[in-house]
Image (tube, rainbow, N blue to C red):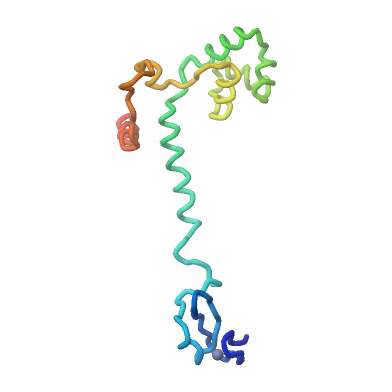
Length: 162
Ligand SMILES: [Zn+2]
């Protein structure tokens, strides 16, 4: 290892300094020519801790989002079947439209299986129906005066339901 400033081999501890924006690895004698960098980059950035911060940051908005959307209606099975029959589709036609297995569609229509979010969205799209029980549908006409929930409202709303 050589000093990047004077070129002499570095014996013992090296110093990382900054001179006019450039980081140099220098010998102890040359360290006084620049500003010493306390945390050299090659050690990684200890203040980041990506393993701890990332999962929590991902989870929170999704939680709120799910709640904002409401919950699946009790009669989802009837709504799906009625909408499908309205289109004169077989369960296989519907399964192909949403790229799922026919068995899954049959189970959902019997009420044996509550469709997961992604399947539910595909069903809603394919059949042009709503399967989510949101307060908006029953109370709002879509005009002005519509209730807008803040994140704080949502959280207290969620707590009060438990
Ligand atoms: Zn040097």
